[in-house]
Length: 216
Image 1 (cartoon, rainbow, N blue to C red):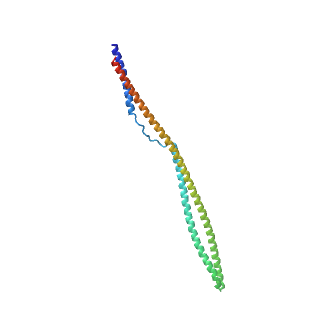
Image 2 (tube, rainbow, N blue to C red):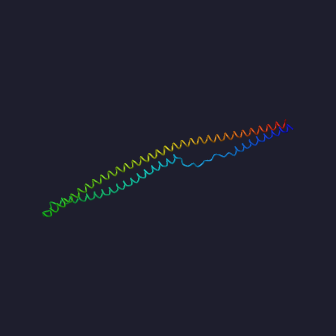
Image 3 (spheres, rainbow, N blue to C red):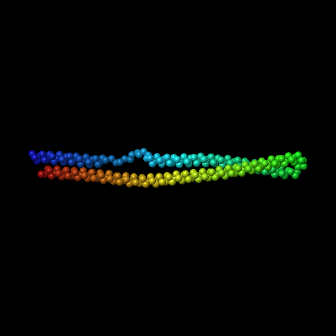
């Protein structure tokens, strides 16, 4: 009777051990692979977007300014061409009036011609002054345009350097995360193998104990 009771207790313990080991074995087989989870943008990414947006705004403003300067250059050149044509006309008129002086014998006509020469000379001088002013405006506008383009190039270079810096940093972080991810997968596989070996060992131990109990 005592032997029967001992056998029952032993079989109960073996059953519990077998159940635990089997459940551990199936649990390790059912462990899901880690799946990627959508992560919202970090504070650093938000800051990067703000910085890039600021660069884009500066470049856009410089582009608009450059368009205005280009229009000024076009207008100044057109006005300068008109002034040159007007000056050429006045110069030819003045030369003709001076050439006509020896042929004039009438005093009234001579005085009238002299007045015309003075008026033409004044208009020619005013045209020359206007031409000089337009040249100065054109030169100043071209200088501003050069400075504007230099500023645009500088901002674009800053943006490129910023993007390159963040690219290098993100690449380093990605490599680090990849290494950590690989190590995590190794740890998971090691854990599964360990669980399976433990379960197999418990099953073998329970089988051996059952065999020994049945043969005593």
